Length: 580
Image (cartoon, rainbow, N blue to C red; front, side, top):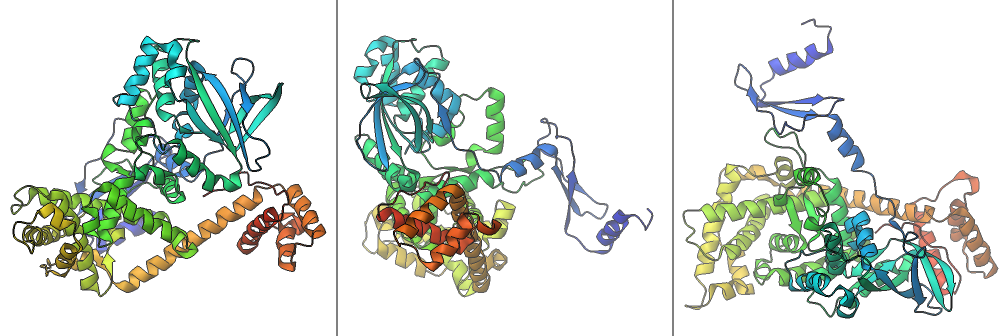
Protein backbone atom coordinates (compact mmCIF):
# COMPACT_ATOMS: atom_id res chain seq x y z
CA UNK A 1 0.00 0.00 0.00
CA UNK A 2 1.31 3.43 -0.95
CA UNK A 3 2.18 5.60 2.08
CA UNK A 4 0.62 8.59 0.34
CA UNK A 5 -2.86 7.05 0.56
CA UNK A 6 -4.94 8.34 3.51
CA UNK A 7 -5.95 4.84 4.56
CA UNK A 8 -2.28 3.87 5.04
CA UNK A 9 -2.05 5.99 8.20
CA UNK A 10 -5.08 4.26 9.72
CA UNK A 11 -3.77 0.80 8.84
CA UNK A 12 -0.36 1.64 10.30
CA UNK A 13 -1.95 2.95 13.52
CA UNK A 14 -3.95 -0.26 13.90
CA UNK A 15 -0.83 -2.36 13.27
CA UNK A 16 1.30 -0.54 15.85
CA UNK A 17 -1.22 -0.23 18.66
CA UNK A 18 -2.40 -3.07 20.88
CA UNK A 19 -6.15 -2.93 20.29
CA UNK A 20 -8.48 -5.29 22.14
CA UNK A 21 -11.09 -5.06 19.37
CA UNK A 22 -11.77 -3.27 16.09
CA UNK A 23 -15.07 -1.99 14.76
CA UNK A 24 -15.40 -1.06 11.12
CA UNK A 25 -18.08 1.49 10.17
CA UNK A 26 -19.13 1.11 6.53
CA UNK A 27 -21.08 3.95 4.90
CA UNK A 28 -23.19 3.27 1.83
CA UNK A 29 -25.52 5.37 -0.31
CA UNK A 30 -27.60 2.24 -1.03
CA UNK A 31 -30.11 0.49 1.26
CA UNK A 32 -29.02 -2.69 3.02
CA UNK A 33 -30.92 -5.81 1.99
CA UNK A 34 -33.85 -6.67 4.29
CA UNK A 35 -32.55 -10.24 4.39
CA UNK A 36 -29.43 -9.18 6.30
CA UNK A 37 -30.07 -9.10 10.05
CA UNK A 38 -26.49 -9.32 11.33
CA UNK A 39 -22.91 -9.80 10.17
CA UNK A 40 -20.74 -12.37 11.89
CA UNK A 41 -17.77 -11.12 13.85
CA UNK A 42 -14.29 -11.82 12.55
CA UNK A 43 -10.76 -11.89 13.90
CA UNK A 44 -7.36 -10.72 12.68
CA UNK A 45 -4.41 -13.06 12.31
CA UNK A 46 -3.43 -11.96 15.83
CA UNK A 47 -6.83 -12.94 17.21
CA UNK A 48 -8.19 -9.39 17.62
CA UNK A 49 -12.00 -9.29 17.48
CA UNK A 50 -13.51 -7.47 14.48
CA UNK A 51 -17.13 -6.25 14.37
CA UNK A 52 -18.95 -4.38 11.62
CA UNK A 53 -21.55 -1.61 11.51
CA UNK A 54 -23.17 -0.71 8.19
CA UNK A 55 -24.67 2.76 7.87
CA UNK A 56 -26.88 2.44 4.81
CA UNK A 57 -29.26 4.90 3.18
CA UNK A 58 -32.25 3.70 5.23
CA UNK A 59 -30.40 4.01 8.54
CA UNK A 60 -29.15 7.50 7.72
CA UNK A 61 -32.64 8.62 6.74
CA UNK A 62 -34.03 7.20 10.00
CA UNK A 63 -31.56 9.30 12.00
CA UNK A 64 -32.44 12.36 9.92
CA UNK A 65 -36.17 11.84 10.42
CA UNK A 66 -35.74 11.36 14.17
CA UNK A 67 -35.08 15.06 14.72
CA UNK A 68 -38.23 16.20 12.95
CA UNK A 69 -41.45 17.01 14.81
CA UNK A 70 -44.89 16.11 13.54
CA UNK A 71 -47.20 18.74 12.11
CA UNK A 72 -50.41 19.76 13.81
CA UNK A 73 -53.22 17.26 13.37
CA UNK A 74 -56.01 18.89 11.34
CA UNK A 75 -58.99 16.60 10.80
CA UNK A 76 -61.05 17.45 7.70
CA UNK A 77 -64.76 16.93 8.39
CA UNK A 78 -66.06 18.47 5.18
CA UNK A 79 -66.49 15.02 3.65
CA UNK A 80 -69.23 14.05 6.12
CA UNK A 81 -72.86 13.95 4.87
CA UNK A 82 -74.06 17.54 4.46
CA UNK A 83 -70.53 18.94 4.16
CA UNK A 84 -69.50 18.69 7.83
CA UNK A 85 -70.47 17.65 11.36
CA UNK A 86 -73.81 19.23 12.29
CA UNK A 87 -73.75 20.35 15.92
CA UNK A 88 -75.47 22.51 18.55
CA UNK A 89 -73.61 25.05 20.63
CA UNK A 90 -73.50 24.05 24.29
CA UNK A 91 -71.81 27.16 25.73
CA UNK A 92 -72.36 30.88 25.66
CA UNK A 93 -69.49 33.39 26.08
CA UNK A 94 -67.26 30.93 27.96
CA UNK A 95 -64.06 32.74 26.92
CA UNK A 96 -61.29 30.19 26.41
CA UNK A 97 -63.70 27.25 26.18
CA UNK A 98 -66.42 26.37 23.68
CA UNK A 99 -68.56 23.23 23.51
CA UNK A 100 -70.70 21.49 20.91
CA UNK A 101 -73.07 18.51 20.92
CA UNK A 102 -73.34 16.38 17.80
CA UNK A 103 -74.19 12.96 16.38
CA UNK A 104 -71.77 11.31 13.95
CA UNK A 105 -72.47 8.23 11.79
CA UNK A 106 -70.52 5.25 13.08
CA UNK A 107 -68.96 4.41 9.72
CA UNK A 108 -67.73 8.01 9.34
CA UNK A 109 -66.15 7.96 12.83
CA UNK A 110 -64.49 4.63 11.97
CA UNK A 111 -63.16 6.06 8.70
CA UNK A 112 -61.67 9.07 10.52
CA UNK A 113 -59.92 6.79 12.99
CA UNK A 114 -58.67 4.54 10.19
CA UNK A 115 -57.13 7.58 8.51
CA UNK A 116 -55.52 9.28 11.51
CA UNK A 117 -54.96 6.29 13.83
CA UNK A 118 -53.65 6.56 17.38
CA UNK A 119 -52.89 10.28 17.01
CA UNK A 120 -56.58 10.82 17.82
CA UNK A 121 -56.08 9.09 21.17
CA UNK A 122 -52.96 10.86 22.48
CA UNK A 123 -55.11 12.89 24.90
CA UNK A 124 -56.79 9.73 26.19
CA UNK A 125 -55.64 8.06 29.38
CA UNK A 126 -55.85 4.72 27.51
CA UNK A 127 -55.81 3.60 23.91
CA UNK A 128 -57.64 0.60 22.46
CA UNK A 129 -57.34 -2.37 24.85
CA UNK A 130 -58.38 -5.02 22.34
CA UNK A 131 -61.61 -6.93 21.89
CA UNK A 132 -61.24 -9.29 24.84
CA UNK A 133 -62.48 -6.88 27.53
CA UNK A 134 -66.10 -7.07 28.64
CA UNK A 135 -66.86 -3.51 27.45
CA UNK A 136 -65.46 -4.12 23.97
CA UNK A 137 -67.17 -7.50 23.71
CA UNK A 138 -70.43 -5.70 24.46
CA UNK A 139 -69.75 -3.15 21.71
CA UNK A 140 -69.10 -5.91 19.19
CA UNK A 141 -72.26 -7.76 20.25
CA UNK A 142 -74.39 -4.62 19.85
CA UNK A 143 -72.95 -3.95 16.40
CA UNK A 144 -73.71 -7.53 15.34
CA UNK A 145 -77.15 -7.96 16.89
CA UNK A 146 -78.73 -4.52 17.49
CA UNK A 147 -76.86 -1.87 15.49
CA UNK A 148 -79.88 0.47 15.37
CA UNK A 149 -79.81 0.66 19.18
CA UNK A 150 -76.10 1.50 19.40
CA UNK A 151 -76.94 5.14 20.14
CA UNK A 152 -79.08 4.08 23.12
CA UNK A 153 -76.59 1.60 24.57
CA UNK A 154 -73.35 3.57 24.07
CA UNK A 155 -72.19 6.63 26.03
CA UNK A 156 -70.58 8.09 22.92
CA UNK A 157 -67.31 9.96 22.79
CA UNK A 158 -65.88 13.07 24.42
CA UNK A 159 -63.37 14.97 22.31
CA UNK A 160 -61.27 18.12 22.51
CA UNK A 161 -59.78 20.40 19.87
CA UNK A 162 -57.66 23.56 19.93
CA UNK A 163 -59.66 25.17 17.12
CA UNK A 164 -62.53 24.44 14.73
CA UNK A 165 -63.78 25.89 11.48
CA UNK A 166 -67.55 26.33 11.47
CA UNK A 167 -70.35 27.61 9.32
CA UNK A 168 -73.62 28.84 10.78
CA UNK A 169 -76.43 26.39 10.06
CA UNK A 170 -79.41 28.38 11.33
CA UNK A 171 -81.64 27.85 14.40
CA UNK A 172 -78.61 27.83 16.69
CA UNK A 173 -76.91 25.03 14.79
CA UNK A 174 -73.44 25.02 13.20
CA UNK A 175 -71.60 22.95 10.64
CA UNK A 176 -68.08 21.97 11.78
CA UNK A 177 -65.91 21.50 8.70
CA UNK A 178 -62.51 20.88 10.37
CA UNK A 179 -60.96 20.41 13.82
CA UNK A 180 -57.35 21.14 14.79
CA UNK A 181 -55.62 18.86 17.32
CA UNK A 182 -58.73 16.69 17.61
CA UNK A 183 -58.37 14.30 20.55
CA UNK A 184 -60.81 11.63 21.72
CA UNK A 185 -60.33 11.82 25.48
CA UNK A 186 -63.13 9.39 26.29
CA UNK A 187 -64.43 6.79 23.89
CA UNK A 188 -61.24 5.12 22.61
CA UNK A 189 -62.85 1.70 22.96
CA UNK A 190 -65.95 2.80 21.03
CA UNK A 191 -63.94 4.43 18.25
CA UNK A 192 -61.41 1.63 17.75
CA UNK A 193 -64.14 -1.05 17.96
CA UNK A 194 -66.06 0.68 15.16
CA UNK A 195 -62.86 0.89 13.09
CA UNK A 196 -62.18 -2.81 13.65
CA UNK A 197 -65.74 -3.68 12.59
CA UNK A 198 -65.37 -1.50 9.49
CA UNK A 199 -62.10 -3.21 8.59
CA UNK A 200 -63.74 -6.64 9.03
CA UNK A 201 -66.78 -5.49 7.02
CA UNK A 202 -69.05 -6.05 10.01
CA UNK A 203 -70.20 -2.45 10.50
CA UNK A 204 -73.77 -2.00 9.18
CA UNK A 205 -73.73 1.00 6.85
CA UNK A 206 -76.02 3.85 7.84
CA UNK A 207 -77.40 2.16 10.99
CA UNK A 208 -74.91 3.10 13.73
CA UNK A 209 -74.80 6.61 15.23
CA UNK A 210 -72.56 7.91 18.00
CA UNK A 211 -73.19 10.91 20.31
CA UNK A 212 -70.31 13.40 20.42
CA UNK A 213 -69.39 16.05 22.99
CA UNK A 214 -66.71 18.32 21.53
CA UNK A 215 -64.83 20.80 23.73
CA UNK A 216 -62.77 23.45 21.96
CA UNK A 217 -60.04 24.59 24.35
CA UNK A 218 -57.68 27.50 23.74
CA UNK A 219 -54.03 26.29 23.55
CA UNK A 220 -52.86 28.49 26.44
CA UNK A 221 -55.16 26.68 28.90
CA UNK A 222 -55.14 23.29 27.17
CA UNK A 223 -52.34 21.74 29.24
CA UNK A 224 -54.29 22.44 32.44
CA UNK A 225 -57.85 21.91 31.20
CA UNK A 226 -57.64 18.92 28.83
CA UNK A 227 -56.30 16.46 31.49
CA UNK A 228 -59.17 17.54 33.75
CA UNK A 229 -61.70 16.96 30.97
CA UNK A 230 -60.15 13.54 30.41
CA UNK A 231 -60.22 12.73 34.14
CA UNK A 232 -63.83 13.72 34.66
CA UNK A 233 -64.98 12.08 31.43
CA UNK A 234 -63.39 8.79 32.52
CA UNK A 235 -64.37 8.89 36.18
CA UNK A 236 -67.25 6.48 35.66
CA UNK A 237 -64.89 3.79 34.29
CA UNK A 238 -62.33 1.59 36.01
CA UNK A 239 -59.36 3.79 35.14
CA UNK A 240 -56.15 3.35 37.10
CA UNK A 241 -54.38 6.17 38.88
CA UNK A 242 -51.44 5.72 36.52
CA UNK A 243 -53.76 6.24 33.55
CA UNK A 244 -54.80 9.67 34.81
CA UNK A 245 -51.17 10.79 35.01
CA UNK A 246 -50.54 9.74 31.39
CA UNK A 247 -51.18 13.24 30.03
CA UNK A 248 -48.68 14.98 32.29
CA UNK A 249 -46.08 16.93 30.32
CA UNK A 250 -43.34 14.66 31.75
CA UNK A 251 -44.82 11.58 30.09
CA UNK A 252 -45.37 13.38 26.81
CA UNK A 253 -41.73 14.47 26.84
CA UNK A 254 -40.44 10.97 27.62
CA UNK A 255 -42.68 9.52 24.92
CA UNK A 256 -41.28 11.96 22.37
CA UNK A 257 -37.69 11.18 23.37
CA UNK A 258 -38.30 7.44 23.13
CA UNK A 259 -39.52 7.80 19.55
CA UNK A 260 -36.38 9.76 18.58
CA UNK A 261 -33.55 8.07 20.44
CA UNK A 262 -32.01 5.01 18.79
CA UNK A 263 -30.25 2.50 21.02
CA UNK A 264 -26.76 1.35 19.98
CA UNK A 265 -26.71 -1.74 17.78
CA UNK A 266 -25.00 -4.67 19.51
CA UNK A 267 -23.73 -8.20 18.81
CA UNK A 268 -23.12 -7.54 15.12
CA UNK A 269 -26.69 -6.41 14.49
CA UNK A 270 -27.16 -3.84 11.73
CA UNK A 271 -30.41 -2.55 13.22
CA UNK A 272 -30.67 0.25 15.77
CA UNK A 273 -33.88 0.05 17.78
CA UNK A 274 -36.09 2.17 20.00
CA UNK A 275 -36.93 1.62 23.64
CA UNK A 276 -40.66 2.26 23.19
CA UNK A 277 -42.23 4.23 26.07
CA UNK A 278 -45.92 3.37 26.39
CA UNK A 279 -47.41 6.57 27.78
CA UNK A 280 -51.03 5.45 27.41
CA UNK A 281 -52.10 1.92 28.33
CA UNK A 282 -52.46 -0.27 25.23
CA UNK A 283 -50.55 2.21 23.02
CA UNK A 284 -47.97 -0.28 21.74
CA UNK A 285 -50.61 -2.65 20.35
CA UNK A 286 -52.77 0.19 19.12
CA UNK A 287 -49.92 1.65 17.04
CA UNK A 288 -49.84 -1.63 15.13
CA UNK A 289 -53.55 -1.58 14.34
CA UNK A 290 -54.24 -1.42 10.62
CA UNK A 291 -50.66 -2.27 9.65
CA UNK A 292 -49.95 -4.81 6.96
CA UNK A 293 -47.87 -7.86 7.87
CA UNK A 294 -44.78 -6.22 6.34
CA UNK A 295 -45.37 -2.93 8.14
CA UNK A 296 -45.92 -4.71 11.46
CA UNK A 297 -42.72 -6.73 11.03
CA UNK A 298 -40.78 -3.53 10.33
CA UNK A 299 -42.39 -1.79 13.33
CA UNK A 300 -41.48 -4.68 15.66
CA UNK A 301 -37.98 -4.77 14.21
CA UNK A 302 -37.49 -1.13 15.18
CA UNK A 303 -39.46 -1.35 18.47
CA UNK A 304 -39.16 -4.95 19.72
CA UNK A 305 -41.66 -6.03 22.34
CA UNK A 306 -38.98 -6.74 24.94
CA UNK A 307 -37.94 -3.07 24.74
CA UNK A 308 -41.37 -1.69 25.65
CA UNK A 309 -41.41 0.34 28.88
CA UNK A 310 -44.78 1.01 30.46
CA UNK A 311 -45.45 3.86 32.88
CA UNK A 312 -45.71 1.44 35.80
CA UNK A 313 -42.50 -0.37 34.74
CA UNK A 314 -40.65 2.95 34.76
CA UNK A 315 -42.14 3.94 38.11
CA UNK A 316 -41.21 0.66 39.79
CA UNK A 317 -37.61 0.67 38.53
CA UNK A 318 -37.05 4.35 39.35
CA UNK A 319 -38.51 3.78 42.83
CA UNK A 320 -36.09 0.92 43.47
CA UNK A 321 -33.03 2.91 42.38
CA UNK A 322 -34.29 5.84 44.48
CA UNK A 323 -33.67 3.50 47.48
CA UNK A 324 -37.39 2.89 48.10
CA UNK A 325 -37.71 -0.89 47.59
CA UNK A 326 -40.40 -1.16 50.28
CA UNK A 327 -42.58 1.22 48.24
CA UNK A 328 -41.94 -0.79 45.07
CA UNK A 329 -43.05 -3.95 46.91
CA UNK A 330 -46.43 -2.42 47.70
CA UNK A 331 -47.55 -2.89 44.12
CA UNK A 332 -47.31 -1.17 40.76
CA UNK A 333 -49.97 1.46 41.43
CA UNK A 334 -48.52 2.36 44.87
CA UNK A 335 -45.07 2.72 43.35
CA UNK A 336 -46.53 4.83 40.55
CA UNK A 337 -48.26 7.14 43.02
CA UNK A 338 -44.93 7.67 44.80
CA UNK A 339 -43.14 8.22 41.49
CA UNK A 340 -45.83 10.62 40.24
CA UNK A 341 -45.41 12.80 43.33
CA UNK A 342 -41.63 12.94 42.82
CA UNK A 343 -42.04 13.93 39.18
CA UNK A 344 -44.75 16.47 39.92
CA UNK A 345 -42.61 18.15 42.59
CA UNK A 346 -39.54 18.22 40.32
CA UNK A 347 -41.52 19.44 37.33
CA UNK A 348 -42.66 22.53 39.21
CA UNK A 349 -39.01 23.62 39.59
CA UNK A 350 -37.55 24.96 36.37
CA UNK A 351 -34.00 23.79 37.14
CA UNK A 352 -35.07 20.22 37.90
CA UNK A 353 -37.54 20.08 35.03
CA UNK A 354 -34.66 20.88 32.68
CA UNK A 355 -32.88 17.66 33.73
CA UNK A 356 -35.38 15.42 31.92
CA UNK A 357 -33.43 15.31 28.66
CA UNK A 358 -32.31 12.66 26.17
CA UNK A 359 -29.46 11.73 28.54
CA UNK A 360 -31.91 11.25 31.42
CA UNK A 361 -33.90 8.86 29.23
CA UNK A 362 -30.74 6.90 28.35
CA UNK A 363 -29.94 6.58 32.08
CA UNK A 364 -33.52 5.48 32.82
CA UNK A 365 -33.21 2.79 30.15
CA UNK A 366 -29.89 1.71 31.68
CA UNK A 367 -31.62 1.27 35.03
CA UNK A 368 -34.30 -0.79 33.28
CA UNK A 369 -31.56 -2.94 31.74
CA UNK A 370 -30.02 -3.57 35.17
CA UNK A 371 -33.44 -4.34 36.69
CA UNK A 372 -34.22 -6.93 34.01
CA UNK A 373 -30.74 -8.43 34.30
CA UNK A 374 -31.35 -8.75 38.05
CA UNK A 375 -34.58 -10.67 37.38
CA UNK A 376 -32.66 -13.18 35.25
CA UNK A 377 -29.77 -13.52 37.69
CA UNK A 378 -32.08 -14.13 40.64
CA UNK A 379 -34.20 -16.66 38.74
CA UNK A 380 -31.11 -18.68 37.77
CA UNK A 381 -29.19 -18.43 41.06
CA UNK A 382 -28.45 -21.67 42.90
CA UNK A 383 -29.38 -20.05 46.22
CA UNK A 384 -32.83 -19.02 44.91
CA UNK A 385 -35.41 -21.52 46.10
CA UNK A 386 -38.42 -19.97 44.39
CA UNK A 387 -40.97 -17.42 45.56
CA UNK A 388 -40.65 -13.73 46.42
CA UNK A 389 -38.64 -12.96 43.29
CA UNK A 390 -40.22 -9.50 42.91
CA UNK A 391 -39.18 -8.56 46.44
CA UNK A 392 -35.65 -9.94 46.05
CA UNK A 393 -35.16 -8.06 42.78
CA UNK A 394 -36.45 -4.76 44.19
CA UNK A 395 -34.18 -4.93 47.23
CA UNK A 396 -31.18 -6.12 45.17
CA UNK A 397 -31.45 -3.13 42.83
CA UNK A 398 -31.76 -0.71 45.74
CA UNK A 399 -28.76 -2.23 47.54
CA UNK A 400 -26.80 -2.19 44.26
CA UNK A 401 -27.43 1.55 43.91
CA UNK A 402 -26.38 2.09 47.53
CA UNK A 403 -23.22 0.00 47.00
CA UNK A 404 -22.24 2.12 43.99
CA UNK A 405 -22.49 5.22 46.18
CA UNK A 406 -20.48 3.55 48.96
CA UNK A 407 -17.53 2.42 46.84
CA UNK A 408 -17.25 5.81 45.09
CA UNK A 409 -17.94 8.10 48.04
CA UNK A 410 -21.23 9.39 46.65
CA UNK A 411 -21.10 8.36 43.00
CA UNK A 412 -23.38 6.00 41.09
CA UNK A 413 -23.49 3.21 38.52
CA UNK A 414 -21.98 4.03 35.13
CA UNK A 415 -25.23 4.36 33.21
CA UNK A 416 -23.48 5.62 30.08
CA UNK A 417 -21.50 2.40 29.86
CA UNK A 418 -24.62 0.28 30.48
CA UNK A 419 -26.52 2.19 27.77
CA UNK A 420 -23.64 1.83 25.32
CA UNK A 421 -23.38 -1.92 25.93
CA UNK A 422 -27.17 -2.37 26.23
CA UNK A 423 -26.38 -4.85 28.96
CA UNK A 424 -23.92 -5.85 31.68
CA UNK A 425 -21.01 -8.30 31.80
CA UNK A 426 -20.35 -11.38 33.95
CA UNK A 427 -18.63 -9.33 36.68
CA UNK A 428 -21.70 -7.13 37.02
CA UNK A 429 -23.97 -10.20 37.05
CA UNK A 430 -21.79 -11.80 39.69
CA UNK A 431 -22.16 -8.66 41.81
CA UNK A 432 -25.93 -8.78 41.38
CA UNK A 433 -25.96 -12.41 42.49
CA UNK A 434 -23.82 -11.69 45.56
CA UNK A 435 -26.17 -8.89 46.66
CA UNK A 436 -29.29 -10.90 45.85
CA UNK A 437 -28.19 -13.75 48.11
CA UNK A 438 -27.81 -11.35 51.05
CA UNK A 439 -31.16 -9.66 50.30
CA UNK A 440 -32.83 -13.07 50.24
CA UNK A 441 -31.50 -13.67 53.77
CA UNK A 442 -32.81 -10.29 54.95
CA UNK A 443 -36.27 -11.02 53.59
CA UNK A 444 -36.40 -14.53 55.03
CA UNK A 445 -35.39 -13.43 58.55
CA UNK A 446 -37.95 -10.85 59.70
CA UNK A 447 -37.61 -9.66 63.32
CA UNK A 448 -40.79 -11.44 64.33
CA UNK A 449 -40.73 -15.20 63.76
CA UNK A 450 -43.44 -16.35 61.40
CA UNK A 451 -44.04 -12.87 59.99
CA UNK A 452 -45.30 -12.86 56.41
CA UNK A 453 -42.36 -12.13 54.09
CA UNK A 454 -44.46 -10.19 51.60
CA UNK A 455 -45.69 -7.86 54.35
CA UNK A 456 -42.20 -7.58 55.87
CA UNK A 457 -40.84 -6.43 52.50
CA UNK A 458 -43.33 -3.53 52.50
CA UNK A 459 -42.04 -2.08 55.77
CA UNK A 460 -39.56 0.74 56.22
CA UNK A 461 -37.73 -1.34 58.85
CA UNK A 462 -37.00 -3.98 56.20
CA UNK A 463 -35.62 -1.33 53.87
CA UNK A 464 -33.35 0.09 56.57
CA UNK A 465 -32.07 -3.37 57.50
CA UNK A 466 -31.38 -4.27 53.87
CA UNK A 467 -29.56 -1.06 52.95
CA UNK A 468 -27.33 -1.32 56.04
CA UNK A 469 -26.45 -5.00 55.52
CA UNK A 470 -22.86 -5.62 54.38
CA UNK A 471 -22.52 -7.22 50.97
CA UNK A 472 -19.43 -8.69 49.26
CA UNK A 473 -17.79 -6.60 46.52
CA UNK A 474 -16.80 -8.52 43.41
CA UNK A 475 -13.37 -7.76 41.94
CA UNK A 476 -13.77 -5.57 38.86
CA UNK A 477 -17.10 -4.06 39.89
CA UNK A 478 -15.37 -0.70 40.31
CA UNK A 479 -15.24 -0.46 36.51
CA UNK A 480 -19.04 -0.14 36.47
CA UNK A 481 -19.27 2.91 38.75
CA UNK A 482 -18.40 6.60 38.40
CA UNK A 483 -17.21 9.00 41.13
CA UNK A 484 -19.37 11.86 42.48
CA UNK A 485 -17.51 14.55 40.50
CA UNK A 486 -18.48 12.84 37.23
CA UNK A 487 -22.06 12.48 38.44
CA UNK A 488 -22.16 16.16 39.38
CA UNK A 489 -20.66 17.24 36.05
CA UNK A 490 -23.04 15.11 33.98
CA UNK A 491 -26.01 16.35 35.97
CA UNK A 492 -24.95 19.93 35.38
CA UNK A 493 -24.49 19.31 31.65
CA UNK A 494 -27.90 17.64 31.48
CA UNK A 495 -29.52 20.55 33.26
CA UNK A 496 -27.89 23.08 30.92
CA UNK A 497 -28.94 21.10 27.84
CA UNK A 498 -32.47 20.78 29.19
CA UNK A 499 -32.64 24.50 29.93
CA UNK A 500 -31.58 25.23 26.36
CA UNK A 501 -34.32 22.94 25.06
CA UNK A 502 -36.91 24.67 27.26
CA UNK A 503 -35.72 28.09 26.09
CA UNK A 504 -35.94 27.02 22.45
CA UNK A 505 -39.49 25.74 22.99
CA UNK A 506 -40.46 29.09 24.54
CA UNK A 507 -38.91 31.04 21.65
CA UNK A 508 -40.67 28.76 19.16
CA UNK A 509 -44.02 29.34 20.87
CA UNK A 510 -43.52 33.14 20.87
CA UNK A 511 -42.46 33.11 17.22
CA UNK A 512 -45.59 31.15 16.29
CA UNK A 513 -47.66 34.32 16.93
CA UNK A 514 -47.70 36.59 13.82
CA UNK A 515 -45.84 39.89 14.13
CA UNK A 516 -49.03 41.79 13.28
CA UNK A 517 -50.73 40.38 16.40
CA UNK A 518 -47.79 41.38 18.59
CA UNK A 519 -48.02 44.89 17.12
CA UNK A 520 -51.74 45.08 17.97
CA UNK A 521 -51.05 43.88 21.51
CA UNK A 522 -48.25 46.44 21.93
CA UNK A 523 -50.53 49.30 20.92
CA UNK A 524 -53.26 48.18 23.32
CA UNK A 525 -50.84 47.69 26.23
CA UNK A 526 -49.37 51.15 25.59
CA UNK A 527 -52.85 52.66 25.56
CA UNK A 528 -53.62 51.08 28.92
CA UNK A 529 -50.17 51.97 30.30
CA UNK A 530 -49.50 48.35 31.23
CA UNK A 531 -46.08 48.14 29.64
CA UNK A 532 -42.55 48.50 31.06
CA UNK A 533 -39.29 49.50 29.30
CA UNK A 534 -38.18 45.86 29.47
CA UNK A 535 -41.47 44.82 27.84
CA UNK A 536 -40.84 47.34 25.08
CA UNK A 537 -37.51 45.78 24.24
CA UNK A 538 -38.99 42.29 24.06
CA UNK A 539 -41.95 43.51 21.99
CA UNK A 540 -39.66 45.22 19.49
CA UNK A 541 -38.04 41.85 18.81
CA UNK A 542 -41.43 40.08 18.62
CA UNK A 543 -42.74 42.71 16.19
CA UNK A 544 -39.72 42.24 13.94
CA UNK A 545 -38.23 45.71 14.47
CA UNK A 546 -34.66 45.71 13.23
CA UNK A 547 -34.96 42.22 11.79
CA UNK A 548 -34.25 40.55 15.15
CA UNK A 549 -36.00 37.69 16.93
CA UNK A 550 -36.57 37.42 20.71
CA UNK A 551 -33.81 35.81 22.74
CA UNK A 552 -34.63 33.36 25.56
CA UNK A 553 -34.95 36.10 28.22
CA UNK A 554 -37.22 38.20 26.02
CA UNK A 555 -39.32 35.15 25.12
CA UNK A 556 -39.97 34.41 28.79
CA UNK A 557 -40.85 38.06 29.37
CA UNK A 558 -43.30 37.94 26.44
CA UNK A 559 -45.04 34.88 27.88
CA UNK A 560 -45.39 36.73 31.18
CA UNK A 561 -46.69 39.78 29.31
CA UNK A 562 -49.41 37.67 27.68
CA UNK A 563 -50.52 36.38 31.08
CA UNK A 564 -50.53 39.90 32.50
CA UNK A 565 -52.52 41.23 29.54
CA UNK A 566 -55.07 38.45 29.82
CA UNK A 567 -55.58 39.13 33.53
CA UNK A 568 -56.21 42.78 32.62
CA UNK A 569 -58.96 41.78 30.19
CA UNK A 570 -56.98 42.35 27.00
CA UNK A 571 -57.63 40.07 24.02
CA UNK A 572 -54.35 38.20 23.61
CA UNK A 573 -53.10 36.12 20.65
CA UNK A 574 -52.75 32.34 20.98
CA UNK A 575 -49.70 30.18 20.44
CA UNK A 576 -50.06 28.21 17.24
CA UNK A 577 -47.97 25.28 18.41
CA UNK A 578 -46.86 25.61 22.04
CA UNK A 579 -44.73 22.61 22.91
CA UNK A 580 -44.80 21.03 26.37
